[in-house]
Length: 470
Ligand code: CMC
Image 1 (tube, rainbow, N blue to C red):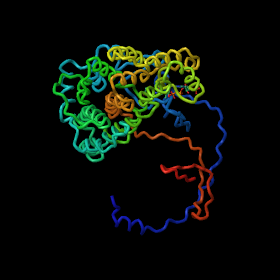
Image 2: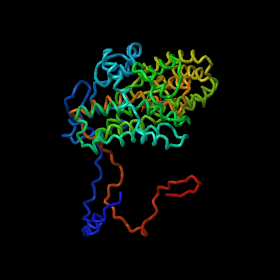
Image 3: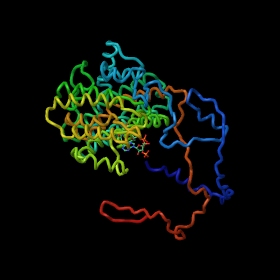
Image 4: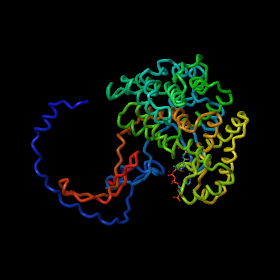
């Protein structure tokens, strides 16, 4: 948008600022001394950081490894025991007895749905008002090169969804738009109802299939996975539909993981739900998070055979690379989701019939790592991503699409956390502090011709191989 000229003129007319008076030079930091403070815990094992304020203390916590940034009643994890529960229901019991939409209802509204509630919920999500993809959003997806990684396309599609939903955007409809229960419910249904068509459209576009967006199959009784497979244009075997439904359920929520915390962080600024979800997809894309689904498969392909596992593990132990699909910030035990996925994987492989050589590599790699002191001493176990990529591959998905399937599932958790966070009386804009270790100054800015070259020495190369030193 061009700057209005009267504003420019006004800015130019501002008299030059009077010379600044340099503040006194900062005192050198005093050496740290051990100190003792007495504070009352907020609850057993939990200290309120604000209790440290009177003592002029702050907490330095890289990666938030020891920080409880949010309050939630949705999902609990006991990392030492390897337990995962959604609103008190163990993941094993949900996997055996609930559908993805049952779980979504539980995450969002706090209870498992009755049959009548489930029908109403499913109808609301499948209704055109929630799931029809606007022509402008479809155009955004189609504008991407077919060679694109699907995750950036999904990010753009979610942003575009926000752009065509101005009535649900606090910047346009007013900062309090989500205080209206109807607007909030509409935003939730729009996001959750659109996710399957968007993910399917992204798949069809990058796979070179036209049209990218298919009309959804008729029938309100389809499971979430069955309907999604229809939107992909896939005539999938019921074993695949059931396996996909289960994988979606297992990936639906996992408390304050990187992408969910990102969605909350973005929400704290007051931004619209669709932009927050786009940010969630970006966080999930990273290879240390949901990108690990794809990373595991590429790692297994690189290892290639059981004989090469010792060589690969030696590189991992030498810190030259990571064993993808292993390790977790919270679990210091087998990830319960990984155990369930390993079992479903065998059903899918049996259906596919053909031998997938990477399965043998994965099983042998897991065994070798679990028996190895390096992994045992660090309590590193397989996480949910270790086997899921192999299942997706057996179903016919390309590795780049695996994190999209993760995002499709996790969108349920993101929306549930968004909803919960909006009602949190402790919600404030997320704005951490920093431990500043740079030059405090103040320094004079010399004219450009009088500056000396810095010492950064960073070499920048463009696509044509032209090199510049910064
Ligand atoms: N391979 C090799 N070493 C590992 C691995 C791994 N996968 N994970 C952790 N370690 C080592 C790490 O180097 C460190 O060693 P040391 O004590 O010698 O410095 C030690 O184990 C502790 O690890 P950490 O880096 O403090 O763990 P973190 O909590 O910061 O990171 C993680 C967690 C999941 C990012 C990490 O385990 C990892 O990078 N795993 C591989 C990627 C992956 O599978 N991600 C999926 C996570 S689960 C699903 C999801 O969230 O999407």
